[in-house]
Image (cartoon, rainbow, N blue to C red):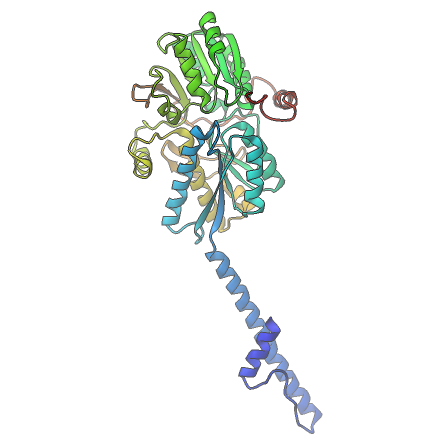
Length: 451
């Protein structure tokens, strides 16, 4: 290509398609003329190479940068994850309205994880290999995160994960904008012991997050001189909680600690009410229910139960009011705003901040740059620790009101540093426990599916 261009330019300068025939008697004069043409051609080659390189650079700079959004839009987890998709897209739209990142527009590629680990794994592979995304924002369940973790680590890529989780994990390829155990469900235990009672019943979906979370909770309950009256699991997506409700009625705990996920929560709370278990009798403290799930329980009495998160829509402050107003302007005045939505929105802004700081979207460079970054978030200043790639978080406990919003009844004084591996057992013991669950389930991260 360059040779053809040189010939063309040479022809325009009267040199012809190649070097012209030289009619001279003096060999020295011939050599001098030949070298003159060689020099001209060399200058043209260098100039054209530089021009092509500059053109490629400019083209790259103007091309949109693709990012992946990987959440469940169908299946049992859609009720929880669809709002997170919307918050992620809102953050991307805001960045595009202000010029994108590093001078490039952001192009989201949204994929449906369909509430299964296999679909999340396939989706992550497609986003990286086929769509060439610069980062993935996604996952809710720990099953989906662990499957996607294998993919992003194999490709040395980058996942921003926006949901509280069970800890016992440190991946260099994941930025955890949700909370670690000591930033969500563990602080609920001493508060409950002091406020509601010492006897606990644990119920959850049968996959890695509830199983590990409840192991951590049992250690913490024991440490605070509490008692576990029972423990039960239902498959993810399960709907039959009648037996669980009957057991709770018989054992009469002071508090129910709930790690059920997705739309199964609608059936769980309905079963409790059918069994006569009411919030003022035996309150439920939920760790996976948000205002979005509450909005789907219009026919179920939930006022008086509790949620534990780092963000609630009711937080006072200008930053949160502005965030809630943006959500309501886009999705409706009554659209619920919840913790994973805020964490997802924050993840996009942190990614953009890291991209701007390194002037590139390469996952490896962005990953190294995101540590020690902080941004003003609706819940307060958000800071990512370099050592763990987890965020510092303020813990908040909210009591559900009649309008399905939450009144904050307790919060930590300051943001809490993340501790992915709680000190109740050694890291080796925790890793061995998690691995035993994986083997017990036949090399997967959840129990047998419903049916």
